Length: 330
Image 1: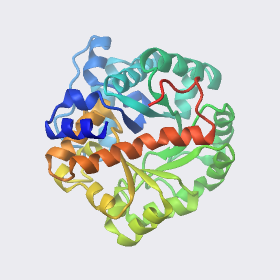
Image 2: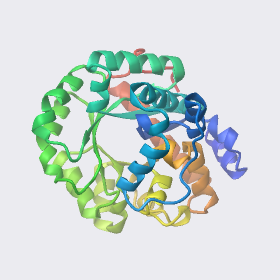
Image 3: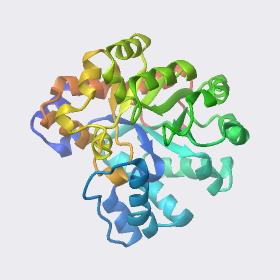
């Protein structure tokens, strides 16, 4: 498979890259599909953004106006989640983590109905993917107020990881220490969005304060050799999203993306989509973008691909891999 993947990159054969097993470990469920697929189901004319965004808020406004308004409410949300599973299947994603918020769970009537709906979608649209659902907290939430709902969701045993997302400056990660200790007791992977907009020191603080296993984004760590060494020594994996970083002005282009520096320092990295419905780049396209730019070799990109697929083996080791949550072995 290694040689096949490398040759597909070298020949710039997107179709062949899409047929090779990959992971997508950073994808928000309601924003993870293909915009053309969503447009077809919504019977609307939708198009990806024409330029970059200055802030997360600007990105959110664009999404609301140009996508959500054409597929609103619960029906629209389910359509977009369906698109995320369909996209994963079409792009050869064999390990898929989708990120869900507490309000999304509530919109379907609670934990039980929500899980049943998502299991059905997984089984119907992406049965070959090992599915690793992620429970997300908003960085601006009141941790005390969401604790009961957070624990109820964890107690279901269905979620494989937890995350904090949203505005990194909303409040200190220390506010979430009690909830992350609680999550650790349920045996899930601990993740958080950090270092997308902040500093290298913010990444290290989040990893140490919350005892994170993995980080979403984390590219600011490339600013500090000390932080990169600490991440490498601790084996903390960063789930990097190149096009997202470029579209949100955190990186200038693919040819100068910080993933190069992180990789060279021995930091574990994976390549992911983040919000494909907005950024319009599949995992396969992300690999090709980095290869075409000359930033990384085909062999290095294959090593990153294999790093993402290691999560499958970890699921087996943790005893969490079941026919209920996963499909065909890799």
